[in-house]
Image: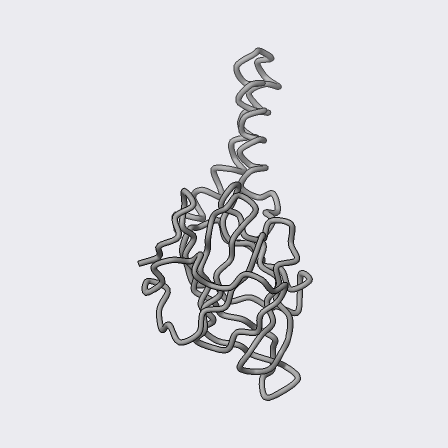
Length: 182
């Protein structure tokens, strides 16, 4: 019901102000008309849906890694990590340090949770790509020297037993160049 009232008001306001301006041409109804058109536009203008990024410092996301060139962005500004992924199998995936925002990528095996990583710099960042399996954690270092840890939760591969290509991750971005996720 509330949406109907708002929808009616948003449409009625420009009509009312236009009628007022027609019968009493002056500054006030003209400004009201312009403002009500602006409000109408902001409520009904098509919004860009962002499918391949999350600005939050921590979260769980699922995305189609076969689209957007395998890129998914977490964070923003100096805490931005443009991750790059490609198909490996239904229980592993390739990850790359190719995007310009990424300085290095390291693989953490045998650690069951991100909060058990006490020093992100202790892992090997020497390779361009890594191939984590479900449950593994990937550490990213960005071009500003900040770190993010991404745990692979689920991998779906449409060339095997799944109907879609989909990656589910949990991630934490450490601000201020902290290396301890515990």
